[in-house]
Length: 91
Image (cartoon, rainbow, N blue to C red):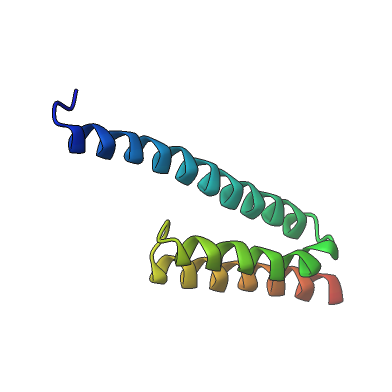
């Protein structure tokens, strides 16, 4: 356990930040999972959900929960998945 006052405060801050980050990460991952389910079932609601998913990913990037490259990669792959699903519906 931390001994000095500053170390104790840092410990408390870290615990609070960790809780907050876990909640944020779960929210992001659950929204991605929901989007993947919609695209797998060729649901047209998936296209409507994409902007809110982008917003969530960008927010996680802004608060440094994920890195820039990962955010870009996620958005790219999710868009690709949506387009692949829409191509199947047209055929």
